[in-house]
Amino acid sequence: TGEDNIVIEACWGLGETLVQGEVEPDLYVVSKDGKIISKKIGKKTIKRIRDFASDATVTVPVPKEFAEAQVLTENEILQLVDFGKILEKHYGKAQDVEFAIEKSKVYIVQTRAVTTKAKKEEMKIKGEPILRGLGSSPGVATGRVRIIKSLQDVEKVEKGDILVTKMTSPDLVPTMSKCSAIITDEGGVNCHASIVAREMGIPCIVGTKNATSVLKDGEIVTVDAYNGAVYPGEVSIEKVKEEKAPVSLSTVTQVKVNLAFALGNLEEIAARADGVGLLRIEHMISKYGIHPAKLIKEGKREEYIRILLDGIRPIAKAFKDKPVWVRTLDARTDEFRNLEGGSEEPIEANPMLGWHGIRRSLDEPELLKAEFEAVKRLHEEGFTNVHVMLPFVISVDEFEKARKIANEVDLPLTVRIGIMVETVGAALTIEDFCKAGIDFASIGSNDLTMLALGVDRNNAKIASLYSEFHPAVLKMMKEVIETCNRYGVESSICGESGSNPEMVKKLVKFGISSVSCNIDALDDVRKAVAEAEREILIELRKGKSY
Image 1: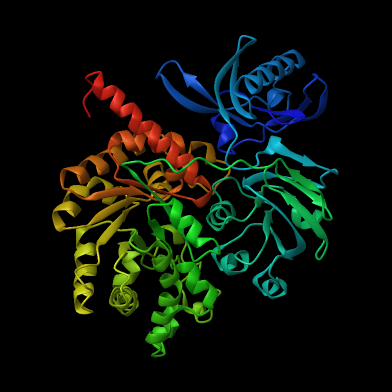
Image 2 (image 1 turned 120 degrees about the vertical axis):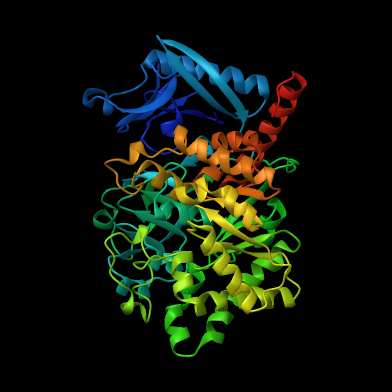
């Protein structure tokens, strides 16, 4: 609800497909006197429903005749408008309402005040959009279009420009960081562009299908990533005055953030988060433009260490006594090929399952030594909150070899060394890792889900099969958390699941020590953690054991 109009989104089946951005929902804008101002019928190719045989939620295709059909009847729309007005009047402020309709009966399942940021329905937008897609990282920006068809085009991108491309890649991250918004032809809510944009706090619209052909290089456009719309020129977008979010909730389970480099509002982020659960170093390296292996080969080890120190130090400083977990290098061979010296990278049939993570670090120990040396120097500077996380581990032997290398560079004992649990191998042998002395374990849910289910999350044809809520994935996560708890090892999660409130509630009830989420999800995740902890207390009072 809002000052003048009520905006309604609807899809077939359960609302999760809408929330997760897996379908393009219908969008109805209705005045408070019941006049339908506009209707946009979305493409809803899948839906979530209850499977009565297994009593589980399953994803099924929507029949063609319904995929692009209007979900709500006019009578249902008007019923929702009436409910919206009643709720807004009762609570005295704009409401974010969730509803369900079964057998033509409307049910209100949740309502909450809109308090943290301008929502779609709280914006007044003048003009007609020239392009639509999926808003996957919220925000509004106006700037000059820069169409990127190859890496040679990035030189024309200046600070504040709007990057338009078919799909982003890790090579584009340094360029993305200076843009005011990102628009892509392809992709969904969990694609590379979406994930990186959310981490950077940059408005992003994906899945437009034809942005690179509709938009013209150099033209000025306004990006409304709340609604997935692009307008020509500088458009007047009036936001209703934002109300301040309530004081941060206090939770036993820590809520951390995922970062790739120091952002402009780092101090504000540090004040709201309990630490950094994942700090990637790949983007720091991409920004520098030279492959780290080339630096080592040419005897420029100190240069590599300096790149890491310059990238990590401001984050360690902003977070002060809060933990910062730095992931050692985890670049696939296709990600750094366009860097200077990257031409020597091997060509792999499937880089995602290839030579990266700890397996590459052990084959090129001088790289790992330099990374450990950077952390060592940070501790010597007083930043003892910086720790090390080893990626794509599959065996205890890998952990022990990495620890031996750490000892060779005299990595201080104050540096905690943990692992990413991204592979089935690591998940099923987590007890062996705990016995070997890991200090923490962080679940990389993106890769763990993909590897457990044998589903490529970037393949649109089978994306509907990718679900971290699959019983097999949940069972592994639960086992990892419970095993870590038995051995006094901190457990966490840093994949996209850590930004999903529904998943976070499950993890808290499993007993997870902390969750690490994207910046834009901090408030929602903190709220979900607090709710789950409150539910646990209520259930304990009723005699349920955990």
